Length: 218
Image (cartoon, rainbow, N blue to C red; front, side):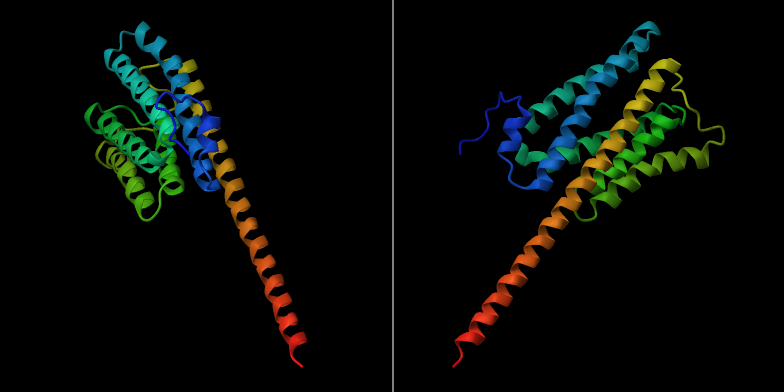
């Protein structure tokens, strides 16, 4: 089968080239998570423009470019999925460190949601110890901000955006978290049920072979 075209934008075509159900689940979740980034940029950018937040505008532009590149690579070269997950998690961790420890942004619900999502994707999307590594790296700036800055109260609103924009981002993050858990849970149980069914079939096959063997003994 020829490789996918570099110009492929079809998720269906990409999934058709992936045989493993767990890998398909990762691709689907990863695809829609990053697709949501465009919606988040569309929500935040008007607030940044109105308030002349140059850093926020630059971050939106960078996020749009990176998201487009990642989606393009994912759909045309799905075998690079693990590398894309590493890149996405590392970028999120670095972004968190910069915002909390360099720009001294306030701790808010969105920051906590981002921390939770980094933990979730690192454990679901990667194998081995990577879940612990990325989770610890994401938690360090949050813990440091609380320990070394007593004024770092947990709030709801991002100070550089409106309440409406913040509320929509919080809602989108919760949707991503809920759907991610739901989809991964379904795939996990489907894999377990398939293995149990295969084991039952093997047991029946072995029992039939054993019975046939004893029947053949004179």
